[in-house]
Length: 486
Image (cartoon, rainbow, N blue to C red):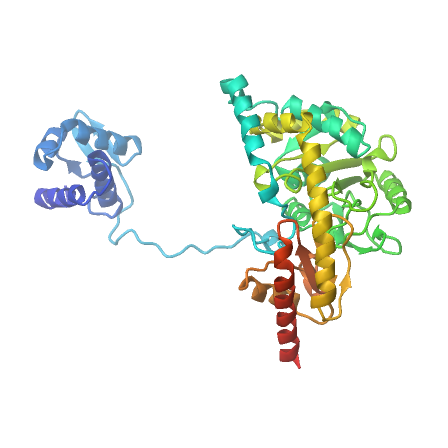
């Protein structure tokens, strides 16, 4: 042994004395492992027997044996009839301190959109967050307790990879009434939010190097999914009729991502003329349309716009929905509706890619929908958001003096303002110091420096009492920035 006996015992005594909340066994294990890794106990060194160690350290022999057995299991020690010795390691003459590794992230990481801050509590004007304090939590808790009481441990397994049949059936009935989609439970896959639905579409329907059309500006989550799977993105501009590919010299797509019922972030509705043209384009190019229907439940004029999936038979459309916007974000639950032929073909792959889970939450949500609570909650939120939308428009008219254009309105939970000649990214950074979190409009473009500047103001989880002081503060920040430029 290269370390004297007294020195070894001194080392182990010190470790046991300063062990804090660790057990004697754990402290002894850690001290011996560190001595081995640090080179103080060389490869091949013999340790005293467990009886001797126990006597010298005034601990039980079982404690010593448990520590030695764990080190043997992990390959630090070898134990046999000849005794216990240190396993063969590379010779160490210096402490076990290494420099930081040379970190080189994959090139695709640089192409990812900037992350969206997720503050708790949620700051004012944060886009995409519903009025979570209006969610009927006591009712949800009662339904959840009922599910556990009635089904208990039967829900602790993985479950169907595509999701709980009761929830899929409830969603199918809801879509038939609210969105004009005629489907059955076998066509529905439950996902962890809409983003997992996009990920599944790219996995099922594209190959690396394929082209994906994306709205420009548009949803950053879709862009992340396409970067991750090696797709080439082509940005398609957006106007008052939604996605506008006419006159664009864009390469043939494999996937087309669009939010036709309420484009994000501009708020325009894809016209019926363009919807039919896009369906025909997809048919000609053998492409698939990913229809993101993230908040069409909240329209303040007329009825919700029907989904593209229900416009024609056998449309090459995968419909994505989410409960993060209609209920609460941490539920992390969405769904996708596949055309019958695709649902049948993809069923084995879904079984390989997903593992099910969250079964009690899914069963609770199924009850929430089936017993009418979901429809009532949507109606209440529609009234609330309509009121907040009109109040915010009034405040903008009176408090925002910088020339601006309102791009998104009459639906959803956000307003988009186009404001020329501002550094919206810097403005948003400054606003956070005042607990305001609007989003920079330019950040939703593929090339942020070439996009329209402005602000995306979420009002779903922002009370009307915060509108006037918040807009006044934003106006002050804009004035300060423009004065600095001058």
